[in-house]
Image 1 (cartoon, rainbow, N blue to C red):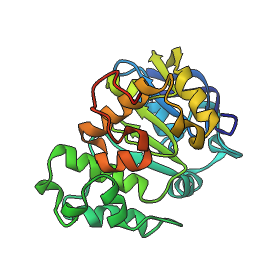
Image 2: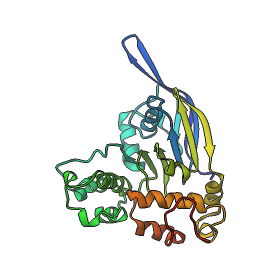
Image 3: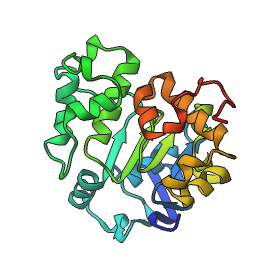
Image 4: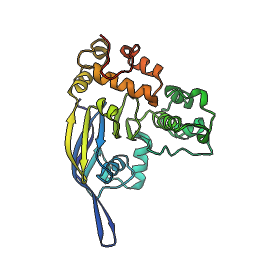
Length: 266
């Protein structure tokens, strides 16, 4: 993976309230490549959400540099960040942020109406197994179904980058996730551990990174060394984050997967 999407250099964020200063980011250095799935782990208050918000253009850094491809986000004003979010970023928030007076279809359509090259709302909802319930309101959906509407809304604009606070799915894009789910950790290319506003440790899944570098045609026919991560992804999907038929269509070798940890095709 050499196509660099994000690059952070000595990124800091300090919140000031009276005489109190909270250092949410303390000189973060980070690079993320196209197609990577990166997980951020750490206790509450360690700086994960702050970094996600800065990467998504929801907040400004105090100092340092952050670039998205050739665009320096740290040089943009609020209007520039709004344009960046609209064109490039999809968000999946922990608490869904659905509009209660709109149906699932209408919540997704809010995004597709302003996107450059969106999916149809029903297409995005079908990918998460919710097409039959697209005319239901959030109050008529379970928590898991609301989460899937939020995922459909995020992917409907075909974003280059997905930023997810807890939920994730089988998605062909650069993805940064905050999660406490061990299954999701297994399918990440990298796991970044946060502590006191800094990246304290990085763990790399070499099997997944090697598979990604070979390309999808080779990955589909070669399951050696990748069965465990792939099956972990399948288990996450079968837990309700993505419809199993979509799992099989995107990863044909998982079609007969039993969903058990460590299980994989022969």
